[in-house]
Image (tube, rainbow, N blue to C red; front, side, top):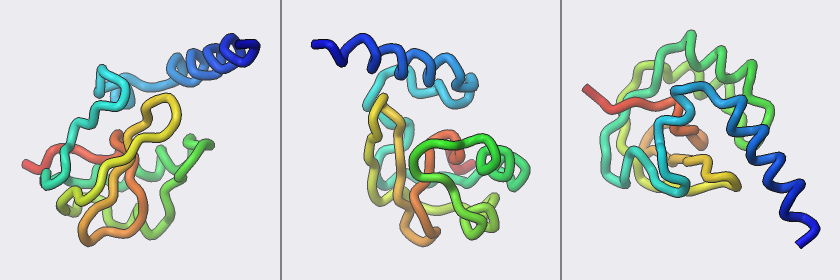
Length: 105
């Protein structure tokens, strides 16, 4: 039980640094884009900014940044510690953070 307080502090600290866009999934372990959903990768400016500021797990690669604006289908959804939602897409490379994707319009 001694680990609970430090872990909560880390989770709180992480969550408090999140942008509004990163907090769009209100429930932990609940994805915005279920398997089979068509999604669009956000624009290159957003991806570059995310690449620069994200210092935790599963950083996005320069190869992923080059796919900005493309549409693909979600094939797998996973969750990292603290409820971060991660996606695998059918064609596009890499693991995608939820905040780097939007509903395909």
